[in-house]
Amino acid sequence: MSKAQDPRYSTANWWQDRLLRSLIGALLLLPYRLRVPLSGWLVAYIVAPVAGYRTRIRENLALVFPDMAAAEVTRLCRAVPRNIGRSLIELYSGPEFVARVTRQPLKGPGLAALDAAHKAGRPVILVTGHFGNYDASRAALIARGYRVGGLYRPMNNGWFNDHYVAAISRIGTPLFPRGKKGLGDMIRFLRSGGMLGLVIDQHMGDGARLQFFGRDALTGLSAAELALKYDALVIPTYGIRAQNGLDFDIVIEDAIPHGTPEEMTQALNDSLEHLVRTHMDQWFWIHRRWKSRP
Image (cartoon, rainbow, N blue to C red; front, side, top):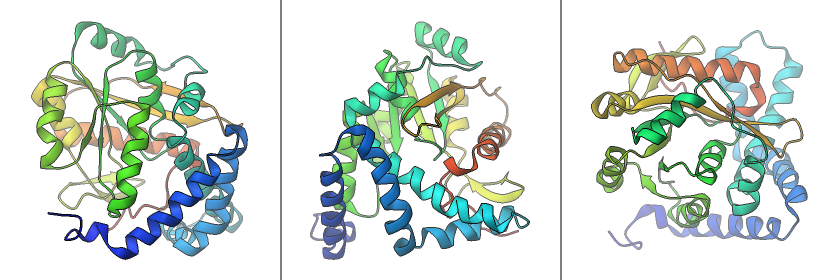
C-alpha cells in the first residue's frame, strides 16, 4: 500500500505532524536543562486541555480511585501530562538523554540475573510500562553494552511515526514494529540471545482478562508466551524519574518465575501497579487501559 492509499498518511495527519515537528524542532534549539521542563509545561498547560488528556485522566482515576481527593486529582491532571511532555522531547534528544539515564548505576534485585543471562547469551524479555520514561531502561542498558531490541506499536499518524521511529533508533537498535512485518526479525534476534524490550500496559482486544488496580484489564500475553517458548527470562525494568525531573533511577526487578502465561502476566501487572501506586504522577493515565467493563 502506498502512502497515498494509507489512511495513516492523510492530509489531516500531515498538518498535525507539521505542527508537532515545528514544536519539537523549536524545543531542540534550547539547552537540555531548559528544553525538557519547557516541553513538560507545554503539554501540561497547552496540549492536555485541547487533546482531552485531563478528561481521560479524571475518568481513569474515578474508575480505580473513586474516593481520591479532588485536590489530588487536579494535581495529577497537570503532573501526568507534564511527565509525558518531558518524555517526548527526551526521546528526540538522543545522546543528551542517554547521558542522563547513565548518570546513576543500575539497581535492583534482578541485576545479577540480567548480567548472568547477558554473559551466557540467554534470551531475556524486558518488560516495562508507560511509566517515567518508558525508553529510559532500554537506553541505559544499550549504553552499557547489553544487546537490547525494542518492540513498538506503529502510531496512527504515519507522518509522525516515521520521524518518531528515526528518533528512538538514534537511542539504539534494533527496533521491531508490532505485527507480521517485524515478527520474523524479532524472533531471530531473541533466539540469538538478545534482550527484547516491550510494554504491556495498553488495552489489547485479544488479550487475557487480568487484573490491574482491581479492575478487569485486557492484557497481551506475548511476553510470557515468548519467554516460555524460547526459555527466556522475564524481567520487569523501569526508568523512574528523579525529583529534579531530568535524571532517572533504572531499576531491574526480580525475574518473573515461569508458570502459565496468565500467571506470569498477572505478576507483571502487579509489578507495575505497585510502582505506579508509589509514583502516581509518572504513569500515563491518559491511556484507555480499561476499555472493557466487568
